[in-house]
Amino acid sequence: MAPPKTPDTALDREQRHSLKAIRKFLKTRTSYDVMPLSFRLIVFDTNLLVKRSLSILTQNGIVSAPLWDSKTSSFAGLLTTSDYINVVQYYWQNPEALSRMDQFRLSSLPEIERAIGVSPLETISIHPLKPLYEACRRMLDSRARRIPLIDVDDDTKRAMIVNVMTQYRILKFVAMNAGGTTALRKPIGELNLGTYENLQTTRMEAPVMDVIHQLVRYSISSVPILNSDCVVVNVFEAVDVITLIRNGTYDDLGLSVGEALQKRSPDFPGIYTCTLDDRLDSIFDTIRKSRVHRFVIIDEGNHLKGLLSLSDILSYILLEGEDDDERSNGD
Image (cartoon, helix red, strand yellow):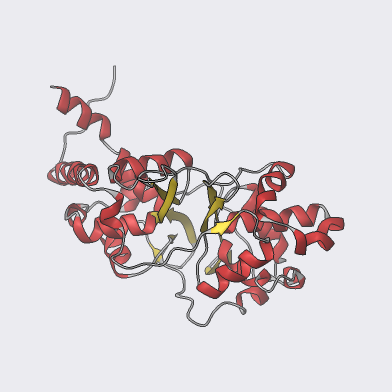
């Protein structure tokens, strides 16, 4: 006999109502609503040299760019830090190819990624007039952290890259406009929100290449750094690899993690932490105020407990209780 179901509390009902309101909000907004009034979009031709693309990214302070195939006049995918890390991994496995790096073009990325057995370039996209909810679902289904917005030119009938929308921009838009986030008052520990098992970690003295192998092997974007007492002291991020190779040389890949972090930009915002007792509304408040990509979950002694990604948060607000929404709509 199944145990009796715990009756809903007022907090349960408030949480469920807020999630339903947020989903309704996402279904009545489009990606155009999220776009800033003024922005700059950098698009790379697939014929561009990898070394040159890396230089352009770092000069403009960006970490991704849509690709365009000029031969077919079509969208060719989204270049991200993961693709550069895959290139590093490839040359580590094939050191004899390092001398050809200066001639390597973006069009060869799929070949490289097949060679090391990793996921290919992100190719998902969406029309900017589609509901924002649909864009979020596509991102979750493909595990992408950003999605290009592709329109069609009325005259030529060819694809036209409009912008690239990130999970952070979507969640900030929700935090600032949806209203329901202030009522998400359950703590993340009670919601079991985040990742708590099989966490990858490193130490300051570890070689950078060891961390790069972790990033590739586990398809992750960051690795917490612990001291000898297992206290979180920092986080090594995928973008840190870009800093090391931005000049087109690979000498710095022989550094330790601690030495690599010293090369970060002076305006690096630092890491964001939370505890299992922090409520989801406070997490959204931080997203609204700060440019954050993940939260390191710690205890009162700053020991690592888990990681909370923006994907975790987006998945929760889209999927938690969604079946109940459909049943109630069908009644």
